[in-house]
Image (cartoon, rainbow, N blue to C red; front, side, top):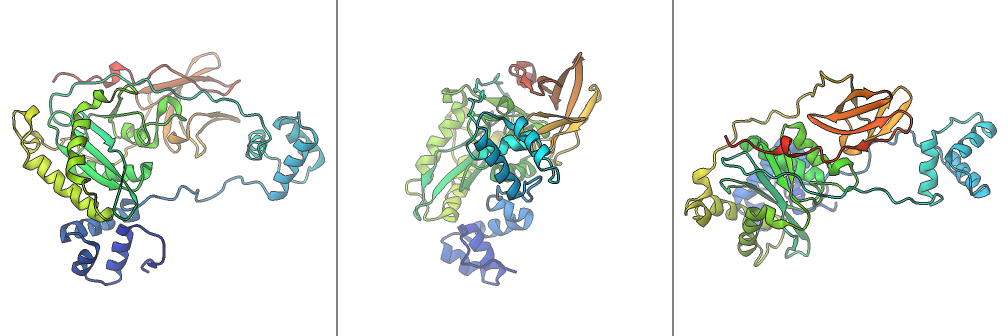
Length: 395
């Protein structure tokens, strides 16, 4: 059943909905002010990837595991108000002794309730400070790709556009210039999946330390997007904060993009995407580049021989255990729960006992940190994405 047009949707969804409702693509393209090439591309992407190719996934969880009954949550709040100095363990014991018939929540659940109601003192969390990583110098196509979002700008319909751009470092070939409504990770992952299918996989990707390429809240600044890259065997490089010149080739392309495509901007997202398509064609196939001895990027670029086959299973033959990170970002060993990061939820990590009660946790070829079963806290290793992992060979 087609979507109702009264629903608040962007132009891409409206376009697809009306096409599925039987309207002529020629008439739709004329009404939306785009070419038939762009219209057919939107329809094709919908058929390949569904709604993920066109819009964000909802961040709301599909289910609410271990959600407390309202009465239990209210009782926790009352106990805290009666004994303000009590913490979660004492409040939990009070529930056990006075309300034996109700399911006993975990201590962490009680603490989460208190935190949700503003009844615990907030502690300053130790946030990840971006430091940058080792940077390689690629000599041939597909050794290194550069990615960024060009600064957002307003369209004619007063909505903002966030262009996601990807270039090949050595040939300067513009692989992707996608008009996005936000910088959310799922939209970026969908765009990269499409890009990898078309061009294959690079050896490494260089980005800045912003969203969605990095996260200040996760271990080592990992994000779901960077974890996705790592699972595909792509090394990650990050420039040093405040040093955009370390991604200078890509920034220079953005200057040209701004001149060609934003003055003036399109009236809506579809029209803006069509401007980007024309720019990509001219930039890659028509425009001579001084840094390339007046050659065009298309003269030098060839697709990667590393074909995209999706995410494959990961194995840890030299570790003692392989565990799957839970949906809440935890490692479970017996009754012990060690919080690692939600960006790794659903992925397997390797555990190796390196000393009495001390464990090393690794993801792919990267050692992330150590933990013990007493504190159940992961102590990150300094810069696991070091030169020995990311530096490219000259060949």
